[in-house]
Each structure stands twice: as C-alpha cells, then as structure tokens.
Amino acid sequence: RSTGQPPARSTEFHPPARQRAAASSPRPRPRKAAAASIATAAPRLASTSSVVVHSMRAAATGPLAAVAAAASSALAGLLLLLPRAAEGGLAVAPRCRSISQGRQDGVEVVLAHYREDLSWIPDYESGGVCFTVYSKGPDPPPGALRLPNVGREAQTFLHHIVHSYDRLAPWTVFSQAVRPGWGFSGGNSQSGHLSDDVEFSDYLHPRPGGQDSYFVFSAASHFPAGLQSARNGMLFKDLLTRSKDPCPIDGAEGWGPWWADANHPHVTRARPSMSEFYHRFIALDEDDGKPLTLAFPQGARFAVARARVLRRPRRYYERLLQEVSHGNNPIQGYWMEAAWYDVFHPEALQSLAPACALPPLPPNAS
Image 1 (cartoon, helix red, strand yellow):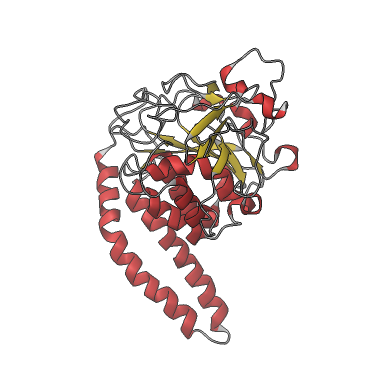
Image 2 (spheres, one colour):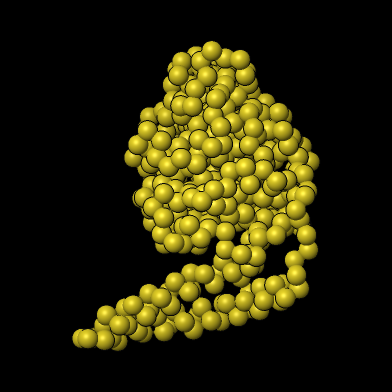
C-alpha cells in the first residue's frame, strides 16, 4: 500500500511489500532548484497575493467590477497551485492534457505511490485516460509529484481533492499504486485488491449503469469490536456468483464469517476511536455511542464523478486532510479506508443504513 514506511508488523490492511519502481531515476538538479525556490517563495507570495485578491473584489465597482472579478479569479487560481507546487515539487510534464482541454469524458487516475513498480500504467493509458502519480518514496519516478511521507494513501487522495477541487476531472479513479490484480495475498505486492470479475479497466468507464461513483465493497468491519468479514469474491476465484457489482449478488451469503484478530489495526484503543472520528469528521453528527458497521473497498480503490466529490465543500476535505497529516501511519488513515463511501455519499451514511447485506453478527458482538 502506498502509505509510506511500512510498519514492522503486517496485518490484513497493512501496506503490501514495496517494489522499487523500475523507472525510478534521480531528479535533475534544475528541477530540484526550481521546486525549492517555489517552496521558499510560495508562502510569502500567497500571503501578499491573497490581500490583492480581496482588495480587488472589495474595491471594484461599476464597469470595473467584471474586470476585477475575472482578474482576481485568475490570481486565485494561481494561489491554488502554489501549495501543490511547494509541497509536491514539479512534474516532468503535464500528464492530463485531455482533462485540461475540457474533455467531458476525461478520466484521471490518482495513484498513491511509495516504491511500487509502475510499469503497468501504459496498459491503461489512452486518449481519455491519464495518470497522476503522487510519490512518498525515497526515489520518486519521473513525472511524479512528491508528497511528505505522512498519512498513508488517505493523505494523498485528500491532498489531490483539496488542491484540485476547482479543476477535478469529470471522473477520478483513486488507487494505491500496486499493480491491479485479483485477490488479497496477506499484504504483499501480489495483493492487487480486485474482487470477483472486476478488472481495473472497469473503474475507467465513467458512470457505470448511470451511477456517479463506483465502489466495490470487498471488506467490512464492525466497531468497536473490530470484527472483520471479507467478500468471498476476494478469497475464492472459482465462485459461481462472481460479478462486477458493488455488493455480492448473493447478498449476505456472499461474505465470509466474521472473525477477530487482536493485532488488527481496527482493534485499537487509540484516539480518536473509529466512532469518534466517523461522527465528527465523516458524518458530521453527534456520536451516539452505538456500534458501527462499515463495508468498504479493501485497499482503498474507487472512482467518483466530479459532481459527487463537490457535494461536500472544500473545507470538509481540508479538515480530513489535517486529521491524517500527522505521522506516516496514523490510525486516522485506517479509519479513512473504511469510510470513503460515506465521505462521498452523505445521503447514504452507513451509520443509518448498510451499503450491502452483511452476515449476521455474532451474539456477543458489541
């Protein structure tokens, strides 16, 4: 998993073993110098320019108002780019020309990278599909945008949303950078996190069945006990009930039995707890103290339409970004993996109704 330095103990949802990117190479010194210059100048320029933007909008009246509004909007767009340039460095070349050219069917794939082999990317690139790679590894591949090694893949995804909020692609796929493949193999590099008959290319087709998001629920957790269940399609390749549907087509029978592991990250007394984090930052409501069951895509791979992302204000994502930006393996990163569906579907919170039919919980579950 593209989340930074792997923990010493590997568990069900820990990062897979890294493979150094074959295409990695040192960044040219001129680009490093340019990135350093931007990082140094960005805070001062942003502070000064923000005052200019405010003054232009406040002072302009009459015929000058429209001109001032246009100019201030352009300057505000520049300010939006400054943090990204300062934090992520400079890309070798713009990867998403189709998006910048206004294609309404454009697809951007956002990858959270550490040391994974990226040689699989060309298999999926096409005229309407482009890849943006954010790397937290020691040797970022050419063209990648560098990020600090904090917050697991959640920080990467939220960074992209916050700094691209006004220019998101019509359809964005979020994924760890491991090569897509079927199943889960104990947290190593062979865990491609695809379930049933789902292929990575399925995520690249906007609005499947008219839907504005594509989530394939392959795991479920029950809090605070930390009980786990896995979709059978992630564990058995010869099922007769394989599908590409978000939930198993055979309902609750499409899931394995609940199980518990005392060493699993979801079994923790760390603060905030899942319930505290979910209600305060995801659902934006009061924590009623009731048990919480969440189905989610194991490995944090999903696709969303721009309009679906924009149902939440930028400030909502900024608060989440702040929460996950402390340390390279914060508990909030695990909570985010389990809560992405609810982030983008405020009208269908799983605290109120399940996203999929799940097997009955054990009698002693709490």
